[in-house]
Amino acid sequence: MPVDNASLARRAAPRQDVVKQAIHWLLRLRNNHGNSRLNRQCEQWRAEHYEHELAWQRVQSLQAELSNNLRAVPGAQVAFNTLENSAQGLGRRQALKLLSGALLMGSAAWLAKDTSAWQQWSADYATATGERRGIQLPDGTRIELNTASAVDLAYTAQQRLIKLTRGEIIVTCGGADEETSSDRPLQIHSRHAVYEPQNARFILRQDSDCMRLSVTSGRVAIRSGDTSIEAIAGQSYLIDHYQVRRAPPLDMDLGAWADGLIVTRNMRLGDFLREVGRYRQGFLNCASDVADLRLSGVFRLEDTDKLLAILPQTLPVQLRYRTRWWVTLERVS
Image 1 (cartoon, rainbow, N blue to C red):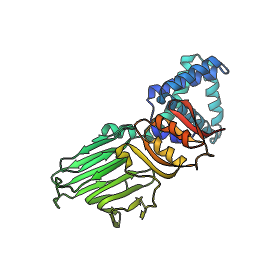
Image 2: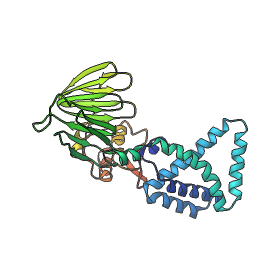
Image 3: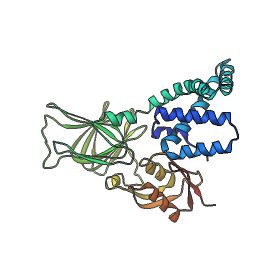
Image 4: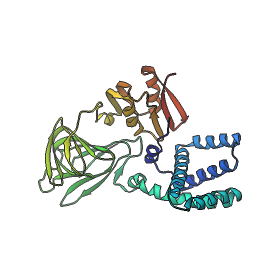
């Protein structure tokens, strides 16, 4: 099954020293083609840590991308071939320096696209992959942060503002202990809109192309551009740069993660694995011929390896661990 390098690359950004190690392995394997012992050593290095596998896949993709881009420039492929041939003829240190310069320029640009590590470090409150966290604010508002999420707060004499910069949160507001002054209405900002809740509990999730708001109690006003809509309990909306629209029902309980659970109702296996993948490092996917299998149940999130081990008990699938952080599900042969 083809590896979705783009999905893997979005999950994390390997450190530059690990990228250099991956380049080192790439050069050694190219200069010692067919060396089975060296291949085993490289596989062992990749299996030692999910970051090693990420760096390896990233360097491989960068090399392919660099080569493809250069082919589109007249005469540039000759220069690239010369660079490769020269590197293979040099000693290990000189070759590493020569090719790593070209590859690291690409990796620096790629790494710059992934701001999740910076957001986690700089945010007022943040969670790592697989972590969940609850925060009680001084005004009585409570926020639950899901995996890989980040929020910033701006509480002043003039405003109460929560900004979701990444991931997913549950906000509960309007309790007996909460400040309800109209001078400082609570606002939640996201990439596409501003939300003003009234005695509400709601879930706000940032996906790649839109936000999803699901109200479980109370009311939430949605303000996006010239659009203003009031969402009430039981309603869900999708919000992007162009419109605010009612969201179709999902085949999972959106708020179950606050209790450490995934609760599904006839959910596609491919969609289920994408959801589980949010709570673990590395790469998780399935073969296309099993992606449409359906499953229902309650699954605990504290150990995703145990969660995955349950699936072959109810579905005709088997787990393939390429490394600890690289898992695919295939149909039982």
